[in-house]
Length: 335
Ligand SMILES: *[C@@H]1O[C@H](CO)[C@@H](O)[C@H](O)[C@H]1NC(C)=O
Ligand SMILES: *[C@@H]1O[C@H](CO)[C@@H](O)[C@H](O)[C@H]1NC(C)=O
Ligand SMILES: *[C@@H]1O[C@H](CO)[C@@H](O)[C@H](O)[C@H]1NC(C)=O
Ligand SMILES: *[C@@H]1O[C@H](CO)[C@@H](O)[C@H](O)[C@H]1NC(C)=O
Ligand SMILES: *[C@@H]1O[C@H](CO)[C@@H](O)[C@H](O)[C@H]1NC(C)=O
Ligand SMILES: *[C@@H]1O[C@H](CO)[C@@H](O)[C@H](O)[C@H]1NC(C)=O
Image (tube, rainbow, N blue to C red; front, side, top):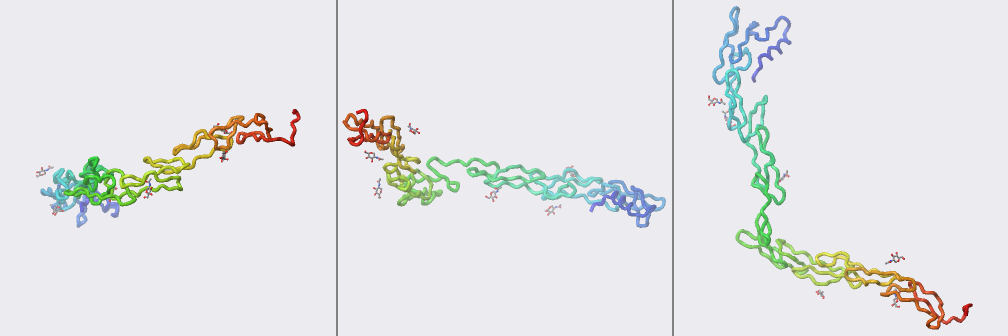
């Protein structure tokens, strides 16, 4: 719309044949005459003719001319429309258009020549969101979701108020918990309390809760070296213990989860400490002159054949006793 007259003329110059141009502050009339342009704040009333120079007229209020010009009309001043988020920063004068600025609480969404044409209100963060960055004249408010366990009315996320110790939270309400052995059937409402029902067979809940299902009872699997110590009830899980001859290597809440067989002692060793439900067998080595087949609780001294009037047939080892007998074929050379 707004033509910058000076550029227009200079652009024209390079286009025209030599000797046919006007000076930079002149314009060419329809008759081909070069007339002086009107100064800023005014418009051409009459073109120059012969000895008479251009007749100019000041722009009327509400119009302006910000360049030297050859136009017969000033430009209308623009409005700063409040319903488009704008207000007048500087009023229009005959030499300069109105300057609009963005109202507080708005940001510009449409520009022309670095001037804002249209602005819209800043977004308001929804409940459950927080304001991450406040809006400016050029950018909208940025919202971020509150993380779990936090809530907001739109400004700052705050930790959600926890329910009382015997209550649980559901849909923003605090409901009384069900007693152990029971699960929730209906959550509480504004005028009814929680409805609880007992756990069905082979299920349990061992603490007050807001759970709507009971847990399945654990099974004591003999493949894992386990047997039942205490059967499951509605409010306690099954308690497992190691089978006879097994010891527990993994425990949870007083119940064994996995057990393995006690080790056996090797021949030449004795059982220093028998295995229990929680400890493996502890084996000790026999010392010189004693023996054990691995099942003894102490190492026995080798028998002395001579004291029984017998002869040694096979010497003892750490895993076996000396063998004694009546020697008939072998004569001791010293005897
Ligand atoms: C201001 O903007 C509104 C909505 O866009 C429009 O209806 C109204 O005519 C405008 N007022 C002026 C003075 O331009
Ligand atoms: C613009 O002009 C109006 C009326 O003449 C006046 O009320 C207002 O204060 C002026 N605004 C500025 C920013 O000068
Ligand atoms: C915020 O939450 C809404 C709805 O829960 C989801 O659609 C949106 O993608 C989330 N935004 C971010 C940045 O995580
Ligand atoms: C567990 O229950 C079963 C069958 O219901 C019963 O045979 C068993 O003796 C019970 N065991 C214990 C340790 O109470
Ligand atoms: C028993 O003897 C074996 C090998 O002879 C040895 O590795 C082991 O440490 C001994 N055990 C003890 C408890 O002395
Ligand atoms: C060890 O000897 C005892 C008694 O002599 C016997 O009952 C047991 O079976 C033997 N154990 C082994 C592992 O040979």
